[in-house]
Image (cartoon, rainbow, N blue to C red; front, side, top):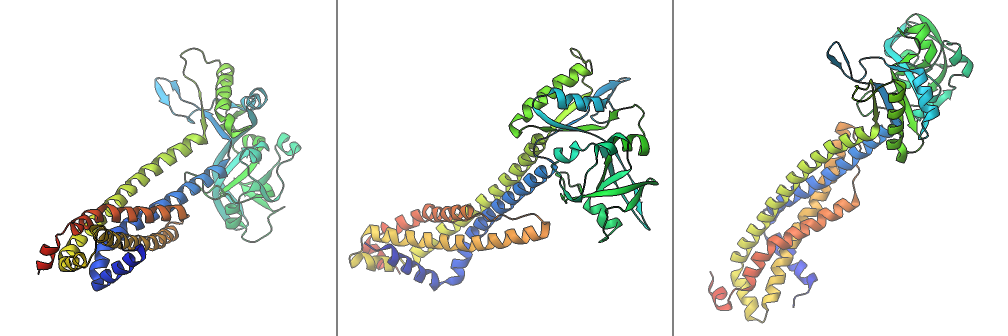
Amino acid sequence: MISPLDGVRIALGALRVNVMRSLLTMLGIVIGVGAVVVMVSVGAGARELIGDQIRSIGSNLILVVPGATTQGGARLGAGSVHTLTVSDAMAIEQECPAVKLAAPVWGNIVQVVYGNRNWRTRVTGTSNAYFSVREWNLRFGRTFTPEEEQHAAKVAVVGKTVLDHLMGDAYPLGKVLRIQNVPFTIVGVLESKGQSPRGDDQDDTILIPLKTAQYRLFGTPFPGEVQAILIQATRISLIGEAEKQIDKLLTERHKIRGSDEKDFTVRNLTEILASAQKSLNIMTTLLGAIAAISLLVGGIGIMNIMLVSVTERTREIGIRIAVGARSADILSQFLIEAVVLSVLGGLMGIMLGIGGAYVFARATSWPALVSPAAMLIALLFSAGVGVFFGFYPAMKASRLLPIEALRHE
């Protein structure tokens, strides 16, 4: 019986006889395995990126916005009317056991000026709870004091993007910038959070006390109303329970009965993450189908070239059988050749996939997480392709009759 090591040595010698043909035969396996590695690496990187963006908003975050209502027969979408108030936020924080903090917000996109520079950014009025709800730390400086919140002080905490455009490398604390011609003193600078899941620059923002936004800057048609309420659940596992408690409380506070349409909407980031993951899974499935087709084509190529090899080496097979080789020896020899061919293609595909994943990552700024497990699975799968598609040619070679094989020209 031929040893596996001798079988590999003989297989490599047979492949060296026609290097170009061997390379072309492996091409389908190379492309298929490379596609698998790129697909898994990019998919893992995309999941990590989405997870980071979700976590950058807040891990336990629930959002309450003015909900759909009917006015004059017209159906209005969430956020198109203002039915939430500061007292709603206070009630949610105090009366919902699954809620840790609630931060009301009121803001707009306006022009901000510092010296001879100006920048258009979002200015949001909110409470100190906002920093904890969003899990947003300060790079330096401080947040608002209770007195500043109570007396609508003209103080601001700025994001990195705003700071870069207006002040560059200048030390910002204590500097005065003008928001709609109203002077504000910078008391803090936010740490960078990067992009949100929607692609918005989260650092392009300025935070000011809620009362300052409502009474000194933007104004409000109804005292105490807010555009949205950001809520932090006590634990991630209690997000669903917190939503139910918030929905029940606001339904009672807003006196919504029976089939009346609610004037608020409760959302959480789990829905955003699930939607993103669903889209990603669809893309992964499509890429997987492409990779599977490439591997199938590669396997057919291996079967084809092994059948050609059996035909070309019929006389050699006859001589081997004549000098004592058994059918099992012939079967194992050609099967090993097919596996060596597919494994070499798999190794080349892994190298191609790693390179492709990093090129894709550099071109798109997505992280590429190359998984050793994925590479091992791809390699084992390529070996399996070699066994599956190489078995028939190997079996055909092992069943040749010595007399007919020796007569073959």
